[in-house]
Image 1 (cartoon, rainbow over the protein chains, first blue to last red):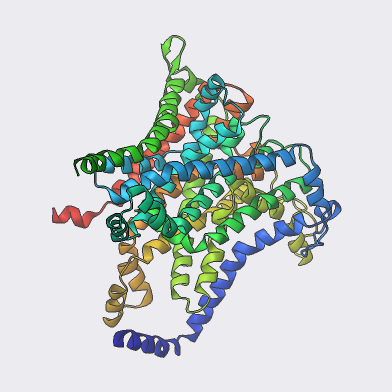
Image 2 (image 1 turned 90 degrees about the vertical axis):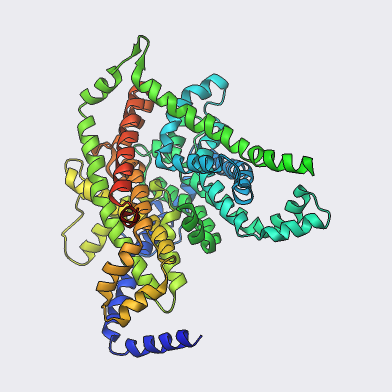
Length: 283
Length: 287
């Protein structure tokens, strides 16, 4: 406690002669914040402009709050369907990743068993591969089993992308919940399953939700596999990519804005977990 | 008791079984199939698909553009992320807000990032409008001219740095959190300045995180695709874009698989390279 107080006192004492240094630091932070936010703001200006404003010269830097571009986008042939498909694929990816990842994560967290390290390594190894490429052979396989151009087929590929994260996140999540709590429930007459349901699950739920949202965003944003695997049932990313050459500017920009909104909302929801998720996933 | 013990032995395997089966079916099997598709034809083993790939005039530009982009983009991202991480850790107020803003691009898909920078850089775009408003240029300039490969390259670099620095930042900030403050404070007591402390204390201790960030970002850089498709169209060929073109437009999944093998090979080569270059030499010396 005393050492903390002294370092704080020292810090404030140091701060005085270095106010010019702080000024440089503050301006650097402002520049970098602007570097991230201004491009997003300008896309929103485009998306909230009338069709004429989007193609005008020179461009206004403030949004008109005209919904014409967005309405044009929403009524463009194929868009509502693509939006729905994106949601369905991402939702299914979320469910699959949690459903497969949670039990595996629990096993890694609670049991020491031969093969645990091998399994962990196999999960980690998938991340050293450009996974969307695996969509190439799957096109052939999916045609054979009738999964070609389906929501389920694409969700399976996206789960390959998202599940390794889910396993590692859940493993550390369950590890952070004291085993003693579970053991206490057993001694009080709970089975392993009911102890899990009544004691572990409520504690793990926020983390599981965060991992699920992570999986959702991974799928929502994925372009290559979606574009390779879907023809009629395009997701929004596949639709936008394949209509790049033919779509007018307002459609592109409205599409881009619609694409980033859910991702940003979800990211905001899991911001608390972001660093622990990544810190863990990389060890 | 006996039953409990035996179930204790079996249970973990039952729990990892679904995930293992899934990875086998959707990771290992397709992986083998890519290799088979790339190296075989009806008469068995062949290099035909690789020859077709290499004979295409777009192959060499695609390879050099992809490698060139990674070579330019990744060092900029690592440097920028180090600057951002150092700034954030020194902030006394608003640390969480700034950190959140810095990580926003993490949630943005490469396609959307491409569209964002296209909105800025296109002929009637915001950059031209601002420069015109300031009286710097007389009228709209075509910054993304298809004949100007260097310009397209720079545009993709900017968009990629904007989009994917966040992931490096997150890894590095997580890594910085693991370094005990005492080292830095001790060095300060002995009179080391901020720069010296950064290069002699922080950077070496950050090596594991740097290694992870380098490997992950380099592999992802070789997968650059949608940003290029939006900003440069077909005028800046990259490996992933050519893979897509062979698979989807030319309907030849064998040549597409050959491209996939090339991407896999350079990803693997660079992973091994970084693991070796940034290996833990202190442990080696102790052993």
